[in-house]
Image (tube, rainbow, N blue to C red; front, side, top):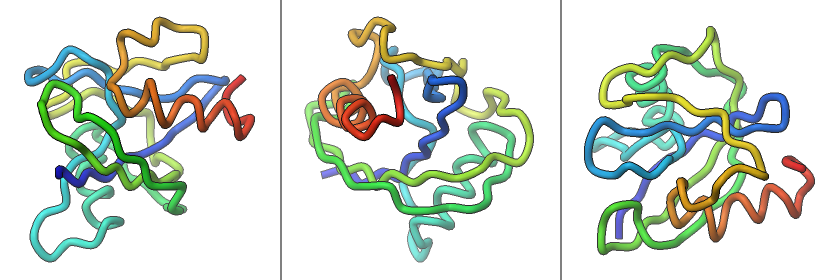
Length: 129
């Protein structure tokens, strides 16, 4: 199983997602895998610097989700955190583009974990409408 740390940023009833330059065309959450010796929060801060060219503060655990990995025949466990970005996010590193995704947008464009687990949870909690 793959373990990834993801960041949930919601603005104007849309969630920030990204498309990687390679590996999968599906939209995923910003974040990534922790390196040896890193806490989840340290990994998230590093990945956000690398992928969004931004800092992050007020990090809080939001939930854990498990589903099929995007573009791989494996399972993924996502530890999802919320946080405030320092600065406007810009696609950097391995990220090709950033997308603000709304509840009414095409769900076929997003990863299985977002489509089947995370987005429905955000709607249930009233975080997205």
